[in-house]
Length: 358
Image (tube, rainbow, N blue to C red; front, side, top):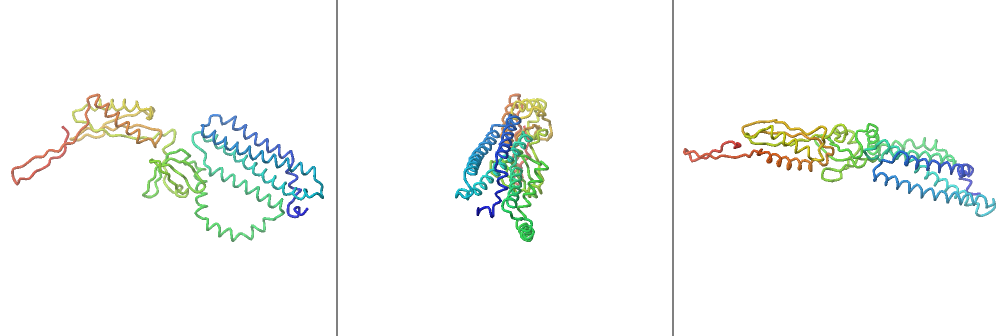
């Protein structure tokens, strides 16, 4: 057959049998069993994500089954002189390619599940899954070209060394972002869902990690704006992670009360008010103390701890409203600034005295 001049049909025959087909099916079933046994406690969103992967995998496996069935039927029925025999190598090649796609998708889903199991709190960065998929696809592609099409890639790669250098220089920034993203994931500086404060020179950015791609890290800011930062910039910046489970975010609020008020009553009232807010952690408990006294007021500072940095403004509003209500309830009044104007007879000039609290 003419097609056999450039397609190694014998290699394809070794892979297009029932045994490789059942082995691939067993691998797909093992991937599904891994999901059912070890990933029961995932969130609804992650179950939906993995469900979409399995649905896609099943569709490709059904197409593979149809192609393999057509190939085996045609292989058993046609003779060497039949015109149908000419399309047999092409059908075998298409079946082999589709089997490679199913194999790559199965391995990708298995790696995705493994990363989900090791990251119960956050999502899985696509950069790791995509790099694995690309490397596996390249290996299968190179093997197929050398074995099925009888093309020796060694001399071709040797003659393209200069081109590779030029291409590497042209993609310097892209490759820098890629390897920076890989190093950040290996070091596990942050995960999807973490709140970060990025300090790069005089620029400070605060946001929640939504996705980590091969080129950049995507954040959601405090005002729900989308922020895209190159991975190289993330690797060179000073990062503060506010989502560590053992280190909650500490925030504070200052209350200034009149000099005639009892600071002990104010401290107790503020601590009780803060402990009643659901978004504030009970351990460590909120506490208040006097941190300043001057001729105008007594300043009481309330310290409290929260889990979600993005909710700090909403929680701060609750602290202010409930704190003021608690102070008024216990007869503690907020200090008010007043200006007194004193007139002097000489020169008809007014003098303003410093502010003070009554």
